[in-house]
Length: 232
Image: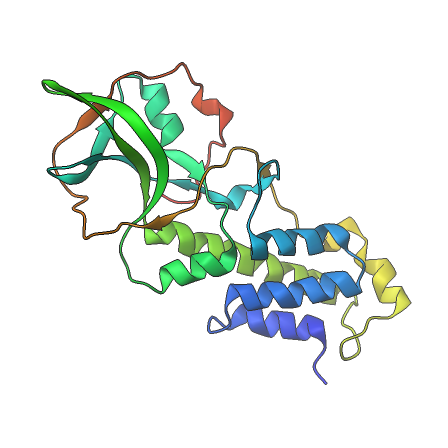
């Protein structure tokens, strides 16, 4: 019978296996080995990250801030303060892996992460309208790949340490070895996060050449977020 560790490796190498299914198997392995932190990580990836929970750095995304213009649809937003531009062009995705997988099955278009209503100003006008971060498909593909790669690397380290399992069980010696930091998943974290990502609805045009500016930019330091975005 193929061990759970071998099943993890096979699943991680097979792109037809959803990352959500792979995470469930990783959770089983972590639980049987008594690895609470890894089991908790799998839970958060499966159920989404809640307020106050640390978010992995691979969930940071980089996109184009857009504002909703009733006449032109989604249009680019330019900031008077370049620090604000850099700050709001980055964010993190907190949704469950299964929700992200579902979004990717709906097409190859862009996605938006809502920021809510903001005051905007342009040539001869001022308005309050919805603002969102437009994200490309590659952001989410990269996020899912990061999870898949983490599980693959972890399973390889388990095997290297002699932790394979017999069927669906592990010996006391294997459980003891599994606690070694060398065979743990290493994940960097960031703390800032916001709402759920969704599709751009209603066939809205997101390639308009009209540009709006934020009416007022607060004094924010972009260094408060990670320097390396997950995608560009």
